[in-house]
Length: 52
Image 1: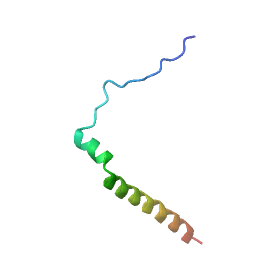
Image 2: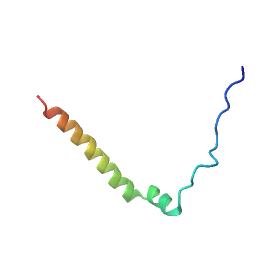
Image 3: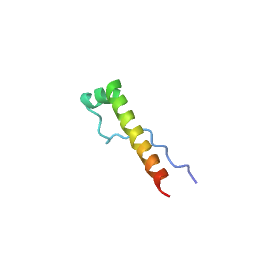
Image 4: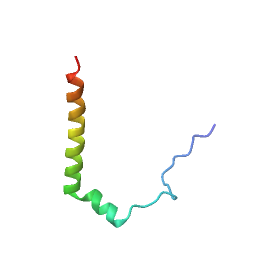
């Protein structure tokens, strides 16, 4: 029995545009996304603790 081949590349996968890469690497955008996701999680925790 041969081991299954390891996939190292996805030649058909789309590459991000320069604009997308700039947005992903921008610290201000990352900070806003982090704060938004943190608030979302915090609201879920708070709502979960309110139930009797």
